[in-house]
Amino acid sequence: MSEQHLSHKTKFTVRFSEVDSMKVVWHGNYLKYFEDGREAFGLAHGLDYLKIYNSGHFTPIVHSEMNYKAPLRYGDSGIIETVFINTPAAKIIHEYNITHAETGQLLANGKTIQVFTSTDGILQLNNPSFYEEWKKSKGLL
Image (cartoon, rainbow, N blue to C red; front, side):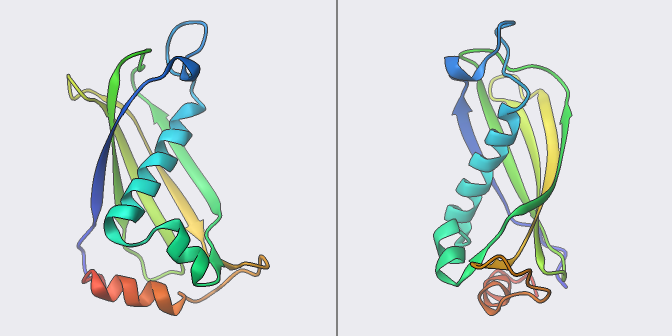
């Protein structure tokens, strides 16, 4: 297995609806930023949600981790770096770093794990063929 990891960076600006009464990003919104990062990663690297769905699979999240380091505030710009962690297991692992776009300060980091199911919800214990082909095309096998 290759040790290569793919990544993608996405810039975002904190919207008013994402902050709490203390004028900082509400903690639950960081998981939404992770989602934005995963979606942008998938589009950039050819592993987008529609491709997965059209292959007859869903990829529900079964584990998430979040570490908060410093707050983002209304109007701030952040960068979410999404890193694909290669594993032979039938799962998709991403790690995330959210930094302040202007200062580069690390604001939060975390991880998610997704598994493969059929569209009827049956857990897939082996990597689907489309995923193996994608990994091979990226030099990850």
